[in-house]
Image (cartoon, rainbow, N blue to C red; front, side, top):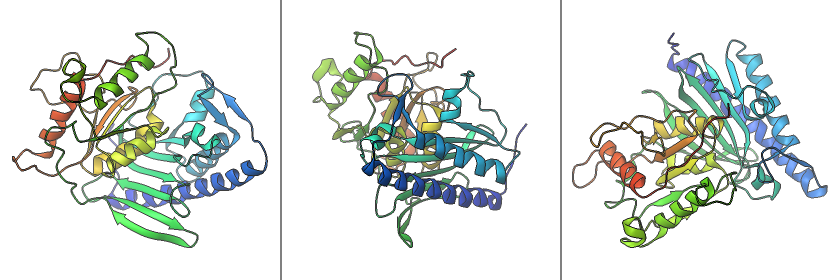
Length: 340
């Protein structure tokens, strides 16, 4: 069953989500002030780099309760409630659904590194449609990235001060073309992830190989050297993708994260003309077949920023798909699946 929302309804959802994310951000800022005074505890989930704090749980509860109060008929998927439950299947359906990561970058927050994000996404017919990402420790009183993925929508970035927005910028202006020989010349984002097993076929080893391939000179590594301008690992998949969506980076190659890490950022990426596909090439995809969008619950994401037509007359999609295929050629296949 398809669910349709008017642009006015989507704008109301967007405004609500922006206010909610900023309220949650204020809570985190106050929590960090307390953290400077006393040692606040953390809990391990998967291992010692997969952490949850009381703040993660409190922020999710704040967001969930606000959503249920305002939109009781909507579904809700949150990282902490999902992690604490027994149901591990992909829960997204076509119903209007909020997908929330209360704190993406918990390890960063524990260490007071500012790459921390509150991710509030809204899906309609299983497509990320409203995305709000608030980075409470960037800028004066935080930086907000948001979008309504709709022909009459838009995408924005705003830096906040104590009394409101200091700067507000639309993110609609077409960015420049991708570098002609991309991924050469690109800024590449990726994470080490929480799988830290020490074996040649582990995801950790494969990611290390991929990073070195991307960084190595052209012709090196058996032809897999890509000579990217730089590799960034921010400790937050949400921030990685948001920087690509806003044109502050070119490529995000990630696997092992979850739908709440990327839902809001995907809405922003799509609205700014970017694409997100599976970081592993589909087995049955032909050389000239159009590349499908990634399954939001598939745990593997390769995002390419939006771009304008290049001097050779190649469309944005032609450039993006060429870069996707080049990245696929130069990277190892990563094995991430949902728990049974």
